[in-house]
Image (cartoon, rainbow, N blue to C red; front, side, top):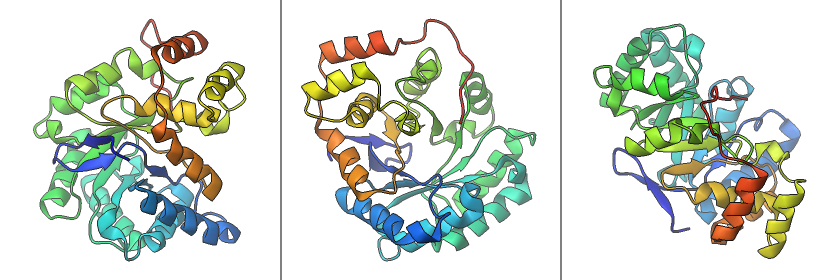
Amino acid sequence: MKKEIIFRNQVTVPVLGQGTWNMGENAFKKVEELKVLQKGIELGMTAIDTAEIYGEGRSEILVGEAIKGLREKVFLISKIAPSHASHRGTRIACENSLKRLKTDYLDLYLLHWKSRIPINETICALQELQKEGKIKQWGVSNMDTADMEEIYALPEGNNCGANEVLYNLTRRGIEYDLLPWCQKNHLPLIAYSPIEQGRLLNHSGLKAIADKHSATPSQIALAWICRHPDVLAIPQTSSLEHLEENFKSLSIRLTEEDLTELDRYFPAPTQKKRLEMI
């Protein structure tokens, strides 16, 4: 896996990582989920994204077990719930996440979505955590262009390390202004639900392009996202078979004809749309 993105602190990360939403919630799936996460790390999908609200912390516990003995190979991302985003709450939430993950630092710590608490208060706590070495970088999630401009206007706001948003072939609204804004400001985007939780897989046009490449629709959807500079895709899977399928998407090179066809099936936005979330 050669294609990488570069974060603000010059850390490089492969463009295909692993999401963990809905993982860690079923004890009967634990062994398989651990195998998937560890195999993903072995393949080079070293960015692992979790959050304190995923399974009320059970996802973080699972990830902590999966990365035992592998911590230095992993780019570990977690998120603060907006209800915890006060100065004190952010610090407590971080400490609790570190305990569940059994690590003494996070590579990237994100505010999960907008909070009623003033963002400058949250940023103040995040800056402190960064100076203390408990997080290497901080960032945000589910923030639109106006939100990012507000953050960048604050003292130290331009230290923001990433924005994690919903992005896939059927959710292209960010291309109108948010994606160009992030590219202009050299801010990496993290794309969650890059195959729309599997709902893309039965699209006939996507299947036709996949057949041309002897690939699957999900591989085409991932290849489409991973062609973007500065975008990290984090598909979630609890299946070793699907993990291998995701990994092999990195070898697919879409042609201009493919991209034109995809634009026809999944049109790019022609006007501003409200940022979508799931």
